[in-house]
Each structure stands twice: as structure tokens, then as C-alpha cells.
Figure 1 (cartoon, rainbow, N blue to C red):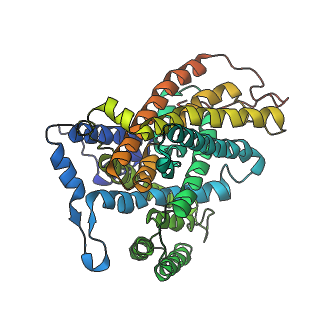
Figure 2 (spheres, rainbow, N blue to C red):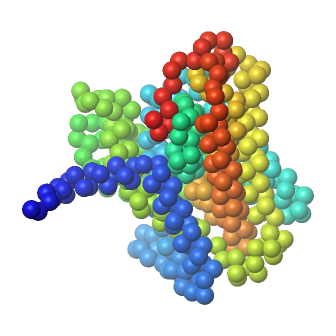
Figure 3 (cartoon, rainbow, N blue to C red):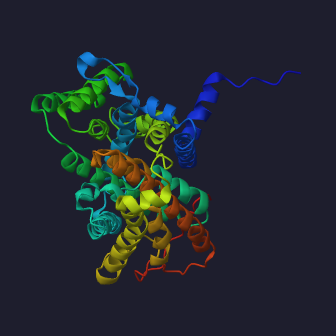
Length: 420
């Protein structure tokens, strides 16, 4: 007897659900980055470099870009659209809506960006490479997808509020990173193109809030907004964030759920399956062989150590230190069920820079040597932060918890558990 066939629609729904999982995103990013590193250091590494340098696109509208540029400017805008939608939802209806609840992770995010930047600056200046200071923001970013994936795998049994804390911190981190890219990594601005992009984003916002918010109308407007942002000289991914931020975060026209949920559910699988892995593949292909080996690269390029130390040590001290000071010296407290002890592995998780750090690394330097060193620093620092965080998460999950873990004088409410 023949087994019943699974409907195509059902298979697509299950695939989309799988691609929305944090663990799936983390695995795909890791596989793509590893594949790029292997190819870039293999006997066929020249073919990887040739592929990245291949130019495609219409020259008439200045879009004859290299494959690497398309990944950074084009595909990554899809990921930043999801970031914009998440930011909008968290600010309007999520964890950033309540200032007292959001205060500690927001301040931790600021500390987690300032300390890595200071570490980076100190190391390159002491090493006598002051001209590399343009890369100060590389270790300041946190990769939401990768950090949450590690927490989902190794943080099983911990209070689910810890995930909310990390998500809030990472969202604020991303918002600040977007501001940094727009302000510090934009060389010159074409005012008319920028104005045109803003008008297109406004039109998108009006349409996405109307009853006629069909995809076949929204996508062409979004593409025009992206192209004009690219023409303006501002990094094109900023268009993705601004477009996502226009999506209404509260239900409209009697709908059952806010449109931020619908847009996030529709776009995230594309970001997870295509945009992020392709960008990781294009950005992570650093050839250590052509640089004379890891030892020579480390000796010649202090940027490598500066980025790695900023991500691991700077993030740890920034997030954990600021959180501890705020909790000990102000009336602000952590959420129920979460204590300072939980923030040690979380602070290490914020050191997983990856996607945004790789992007800022590409924007920071004009010479290939420093860029490659920065990328390798991002990969090493992010990998080390994840390797240190994983066993600490398991250790934290096995320890007994007190009745008032956040020490606010009120017994903690019952907490759902990660993976429970």
C-alpha cells in the first residue's frame, strides 16, 4: 500500500519553519564560512578570488558590481530588513517598550560596544599602526542569529528571560551598529539620490500600512529605495533597515496579528537560507596561505589581534561590567529569574560578531592586508567567544537557582525554560 504523499504546501511550510529556527541559521552560517575558508586556502584559491571579483549587473545604472559587493550591498539588505522589522516590533510592542525593563540590556549594549572599540584602539596604537583606527567599530557588533543559535543549543534549561535579555541587547547593538555604519562609514552623500530613496521608503511605508499592501507592489518600491540609497553613497543596507522600520507593529484593519509578524515570517527564511550564508561565504574567504601563514599575518597586522581581543575580552568586560555596575549601584534590576551569574556566558555570546563585524571590516580599510586580517580576527574572536560560552551555559543550567535570583527583594515568578 502506497504511503500518503505530503502536500507541497505542507512541505514548504515545514521548510519555512525550519529556516526560521535560530539553530538552522547558525549552522548555515558556520558551514558557509568554513567552506569559504577551505576554498580560499586550497590549491584552487585563485578561482575563489576570481569568483568574488566577477562583475555582474547593468552598468548603465551603476550596478555592475562584483559578486562580493552584491553579497554585502544587495543580499545583506534582506537580512537588515528583518532587523528593521524586529527593531520596530521590539520598540513598539516588545522588550524595548518598557524603559525600566529594557534599561539594563540597553546600557549593557552600550558598554559592549564602547569597551571593544577601546580595546581595538589601544592595541593598534600600542602596535604602532594608528592608521588602522578606522576599524574601531569592527569588534563592536553582535551577530543576533549566531548568538541566539548557540544559546538555543547549549542554554537548554535556563530561564527563557535570558533569551529575551540577549535579544534585547543584540537588537540595541544592531541599532547602534547601523547608526555607526551610516555616520562613520559613508564617504560622500549624493543629496538627490538620498532624497529619492527617502521618498521611496515613505511610499513603501504608506503602502505597507494600507489595505493594499500586496507584495507585488511593495517589492518594486523597495528595490527602487535600495538602488537610490546605493547611488547616494550611504551603505545600501541602511535602506533595508528603514524599510523594515515602516512596517506597523500593531494589528491594523481588524487583522489578527501585527504585520511585523507576517513580514518577519515571510522574509526571514530567505535571509536565513540565502542572504546570510552567501554573504558569509563571500566575506569569510581569507587566504592565510597567501599572507605567509597565520604567524606572519599576526605579526604584520595588529588588526587581527585587536579585533579578536575586542570581541572576546572587550565584549565580556563591557557587557558584564556595565550590567554589574548598573545592578549594584542603581535601583534597576535584571528580569525575574536572572542573576549576574547568567551574564557571564551571555557577555561571551555578544562577542560573536560575525555578520555585521565582517561587513564593517570590509568598509573599514582600503588595503587587502588589513581587511583580510580584520576578517580573520572576526572569525577567530567569534569562534573563541562561542567555544567559551557553550560550556559556561551548560554549567549555569546545571546549577541550582535561588528564589530571588535578580535580588530585587521579591521572590521570582515561575519561569519558562529554554528548550522546555
